[in-house]
Amino acid sequence: MKIEAAGGSSGAAASISTDVNSIHFVLLSEGFVSYILSHTSPRDACRASLVSRGVKCFANSDALWERFLPADYQEIISRSVSPVNYSSKKDLYFSLCDSPILIDDGNLSFSLSKKNGKKCFMLGAKALSIAWSTSVFWRWTSSPESRFSEVAELVAVCWLEIKNKFKTSMLSSNTTYAAYLVYNIGPLSCGLDFPAKSLVRHVDGTEDADDDVAMTVVYLKPPNANESLSRHTLTEMIGGIPQKRADGWMEIELGKFYNDKMDGEVDIRFTETSELHWKSGLIVEGIDIRPTNEEE
Image (cartoon, rainbow, N blue to C red; front, side):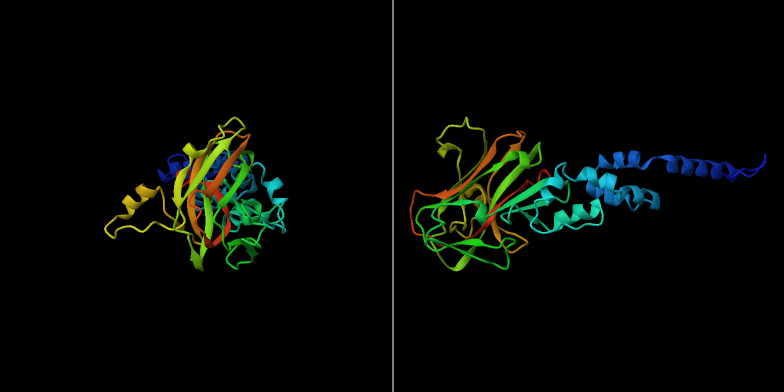
């Protein structure tokens, strides 16, 4: 702290005030500043690191980024099929956002939503219950575009059913999730422009066995529509259309659910068992379960 003689310039008071404020800032503990930053978001913490060298130290600290990681992250990454290496908790956070890891014998992938650290999972085709998948009607093959070692390729079926149940305790609580069928369509496909049905909901063993009312209509391919029909009108008509993903796959939303129950399971289904037309050329990578855009 600077000390000026009596009658010194007015700048002396400003100098003393500035230095005192600096001392007060330095005296703030890393834990306290990290606590404040932890009530913002990963994005805000990255922005705060640009404020000053002192704040950068706090904003990059393991204590802070530990708070942004899921409480059970250590247990999850211990199930990884490959070692998960990281130099800091911040490094681990962004690694899990940008590069999903394979867990549970490589049939399930885990990642984080970059904006809020919510947990995301994709069930590989091997983790799904696919009707007739152990017969000659489906074949298992590798794909260089897939994160999984094998994908399911449809040879020919008339009864198409893909489903799974996933424990809600593995997901982030108080979060709205959506489930997506992730797929591609091969060059020699047929019969895939049908209206299918999907169902996504929490189950605890008390639900009615008749699920037809809860199901919605989805399409792997948008139905042929008049050219004058707007995209918005088409979306309203069929409840959603397939989207191209950044990783080269297609996805169709099967449904949403709010995870406020940390027990039970979420039931996910995609079926076409009414028209019974022969179908072929569908390539299934898996089912992606991630927070909705509203959550991000």
